[in-house]
Structures are given as structure tokens and as C-alpha cells.
Image (cartoon, rainbow, N blue to C red; front, top):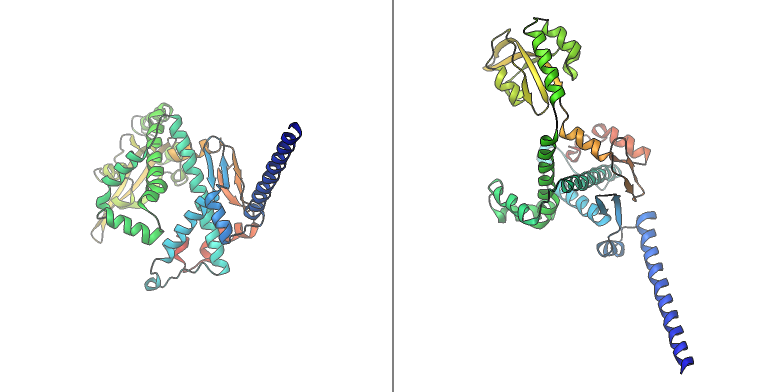
Length: 349
């Protein structure tokens, strides 16, 4: 009896070992196909839908699967190929060698956006911000007027991207809501006391102390306009940010504004001249500008703190720039000269 049991246990052990070895061999086969040989046949596509092979792993923010990247890449390709660009004298052709390179640039952009979305969601959740499906549904319902109605939206999504309404909510609406809420949290957390003190001091110099505006701008203003002594040249109202435009067109030549707050920072503007050209009003301004930390700058600094593991063979993570980049030098050069390499192809825009 004992011998029979031992034989049965041994037989079961052999079966388990054989089954485990078979499963390991199959997994190894698929892993090599995905990561080393980059197979893209039907068998691999079916396997990727079942097995969430990671394309990128972001520590503390989760993984991005290969199937997710490929689905988004397919949607982008469908969008461009579903458009009628012939009337504009443009064409889309991803089948050529250059077309495949352009598609690779699109894929890199998709990867960077997916990584950014994961990190934004992670940063938001650390602040107690959670966007659920009900909140995303509310956002879709409140903006349906832009699309006409729900049926029109669903039809456009299917035609242009091959998406369902749920795809749209998960891929577009939720990430946008997380970004919006995180930006609001950033604004509430940001202390601009140092910048406010600096702009107040600069305002005093050009008003109370009557120092030369251009000289102060050149010495102390921040941003590119400082190189030109704060000269912004001639502008229409539409060319200026709202906060500056609203003030500038109510001023008199020679007048200096109070400190103006904008999403970019603090501004002091001086109206040099006014004129009307072809029925359009223009102003010639100088500015003294003090920059405040922006959400995009803060976000990039936060993204640099994440550990990112890239498993796809064609890409690597540049921690200094907080973004995915090509390993292949030829693709890097192609991307750098994309405008020249892709003239007449609207997919580069």
C-alpha cells in the first residue's frame, strides 16, 4: 500500500514538474518573441492580449503593457489614415521606410504620454485625489454639447480611433481630470512670497525711484525679453496673454502698470506707443518679468524622481530629461530633422 502511494506521489510530482517545465518553456518562448525578436504575428498579438507583458515599469506608479502601447499606436495610425488630406496637397503613408520611422516617433510620444499620465495619477493619489468612473462620466456628459450628442461622439470615436466611449473615458478624460486636479493642488501648495517681494522691489525702482525701465528690465527681468531690455515689440490684443492684454490696451503711452499676476509669474509693463494698422489696434510694450514655478516645471522635477525601467529594446529612459528616447542613433537623427524628412506629411504636426 505504501509503495503504491509512493509511486502515485512520484507520478504526480513528475507530472507537476513536466507541466511546470512546459509552462516555463512557453513563457520563455513568448518572452523571447516579445522582447528580443519583436515578433508581431497573430499568435504574439493574441498572447499580448492575455499576458500583460510590460513595456515600461514605473516604480510607485505601475506598469504600462505592450498591448496598451500598441492599441494607442493603432488608434493614432487610424486617426491619420482616416483623414482626407488630398485636398490640402498632403498625404499619409506609413508603409514606406520613412513612414515606419515617423510611426516610431509617434510610438515614442505615446510612451512618454502614458508614463506622464501614470506619474500624474500617482502624484494626485498621494494628495488624496481619486478620479472614478462616475466623475469621468460627469465630465463627458457636461461636454457633450461640443460633440452634438452621445451618439455622435461614439460614432466619431469609432470612426477616427476605433475606440468605444469607455476607451475615451479611460485614455483621455480621466488623465485630463487627474492633470487638472493635480495642477490645482500644485497652485494651492506653491509659495510665491519671494517672487512677490522681488516684483514689488522692482516696481518701486521704476516708479518711486524713477530708474530707467529698460535698464532695470535688462538687469533684473527674467525670461528672454530681458535680452532686449524688456522690449516685447508690437502686439495685437490677441497676441498677448489675457492679464497683460486687459491692462495694456487701457493704458496711456509712457504709463507704467502695477504688478500684474499671471499663470507665468508677475509682470510690470510700460506702454511705449499705441497705433492702429489696417483697422487693428496695436501696442508697443516693455516688461519686467519675475517667473514663478509653473506646473509643467514642477511636474518635470517630480517625474525625475521616479525610477523607470524600460523593457522595450528600442527605447531607454533619460532620467535627466524625464522622458523616453530612442537607443538607435539613426532614429534620433531622423527625429531631430523630422520637419525636413517629412515635408508634406501632416502626421508630424
